[in-house]
Image 1: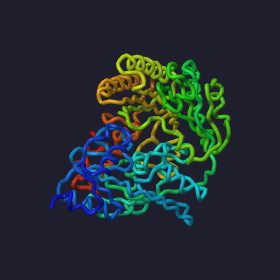
Image 2: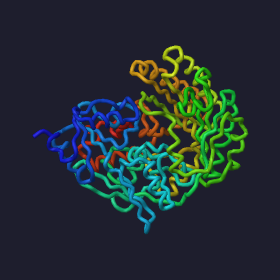
Image 3: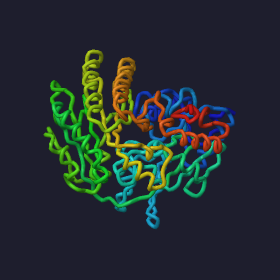
Image 4: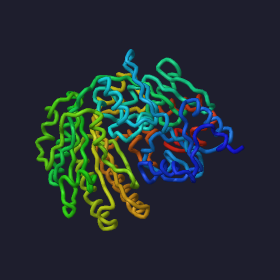
Amino acid sequence: MSPVTAIPSELLRPVDEEYKERQDSFWSLYSKVDPACIVRPASATEVSAIVKTLVSAGQPFAVRSGGHTQWTGANNIQGGVTIDLQFLNWTNYEESTDTVDLGPGAHWKDVYAELEKYGRVVSGGRNGKVCVGGLLLGGGMHFFVGSRGFACDDIIAYEVVLADGRIVTADAHTHADLFLALKGGSGNFGIVTNFKMQCFVCEKIWGGLRILSKDCVGAAIQALENFTPKVCEDADSGLLLFIAYMVSAEILSLILQPEQRDIVVIEALVQVGAVEYAPAYNELLSVPSVMDMCKMTTLKQLVSEYDPVPPGYYNCFNTLSLKNDIRIFTKAADLHNNLVEELKALIPDGNFLTECLFQPLPKAFGQRSAERGGNIMGVSDQPLDSVMWVAIVVVKTSEQEKVAYPKLQAWGKAVRDFAATIENGLLPWVYMNYADKIQQPLASYGVENVRRMREVAAEYDPGEVFQKLCPGGFKISDVEL
């Protein structure tokens, strides 16, 4: 009997229509490699049986929750077995403890819709189409980070299937070393089949997009620099600042005619305390807008509207942590302008999108994490207020990707090199969920945290199943001390 036929759960083969549907559901075209089969377990017990079968056969495999990681091999595998956690998609609220059990395959839009019935929310994804598992295992940026730390800091317990098939619960008291390592340590230790998280009250949110013209880039990034330290004073007011070319068609149709395509600035403002036009936003709001779509809304509605990068493209990402310094922001924006002109000459207009994204990353975020017990990411050790920068280029075809990806890497290198010329301009921390395959987010967590993760991996997976047999994602065994 082959390892495939021995797998007890629902099995999809290349000849099956649902196999094609699952392949087509990946967010990034980079993920569309061809596994020999896809297996869809419906419980931790079935995941355990699958893992034992594959390990016994020495069969390489991948693990997918939502399929939103952008680079090849992270959540799918050529010629191997892809364990698709699509059916592990529950949202079970427990009123007596104000907690929720989440399956890794649940979409955040569905999580928020269910919790809204109880007047509750949870620290989770900002894009409703993203699934629970990948976001949380990568740490999890979210709208409440200013007051609650990263999303992983609100996890109370993990249910984990280990390499030998055991199903364990890891929390602050049982398997506490594994519990800490999973808070940003990705898929290095097992397959998480349930996340128990703390809920909290948030009935309304104020937020939305303000669209600015290209002429406002300078004023917007100056406002960004001044806004970042204000998070300490107003933890409920959040910001994402995009400088973008060919933003989503829905936004573009509202502000430009096709012949007027140009770079625009987008202020994504989210005030989780439901304060309209909070004082922290005064400078950002003083920049003239082409359109202001901010309104009072709910978390469920907001994440349904927030989708900055569409599916069905080759999505190229790179990310850095930068000093909160307008000189660096200006350099990144100027290089983005140059990149757009280069791509226009090489790729048909309308076939690519670019984004130069800035997200405040003040010291306060790490401090909130530490107050809630800490995580493995080392972000609480950062010495000063910083900004997370994300470079994004999105193209339609593999031929265009061969042109665009080197351009993206050159852009990232130029920003990195410039930041390094400024005192404390380049900070080591790399956010895993935005990182490119050639980056090393785990190494950026710091030497001590790398040692801890290695020790946990050796303890719970001595055979290195999740380092070698399951090769996808960032591996702690690849990090050099």
